[in-house]
Length: 291
Image (cartoon, rainbow, N blue to C red; front, side, top):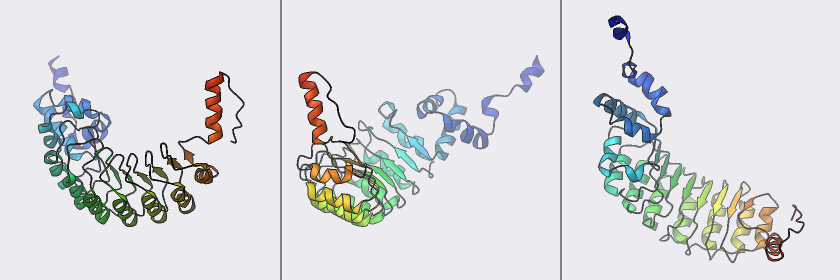
């Protein structure tokens, strides 16, 4: 019995950096990894080794339950992050917590700060100065994003492929035009819920971002048919266009994109009329799928 106990192998006896971290911990959700720290000092040390080597850190699901004092402690040894997801950590995330993490991770390719309302323009400037290889950036509902910080991003992150600027209401045409000129590789762009954005921005995006695949203009009330026609002409790879609540965009321009099978979030007028008729009189009329 004593010999059997002496030969017993425990999980923590396995090589940490060669086995546990790359082959086991990489499959555990962050919520469970955080809980493992409470098991013992050995597990706490193992978790720190894992966090120091992880390429992806997604706090979006557990953010509200993580004390802000713990955030930097978790990432203090990490200098290899590629994906950082902090959306909806608005309850506690400020520049003070974020800037040290950004400053020591120059290899970041994807950063999502959507909904982080307590940050300031200094965070975006830090991202732009540190993460020159950045490809994807989420800033939805970050009203602190202004023209100067976006220009800094455009100047230093020319390889940007997608950016979400939904409800960044400080931004105007000038900033979006500058971004389009400096970042021609953009494939996905959202400037939704911004009444300042007009045809000027959309036309500049169309002329400069020829690789555009997705464009979200939801609620951009100043966008008109002329700019949509230019998107149809200059962006042959476009697959998705959102123009809901763009009251000045009509079928005369959208039809050009429908003919290319671009997904549009607004139904054709006849389709809408048939649906309304169905609701009013209570039966389903025949609808030609080609309409």
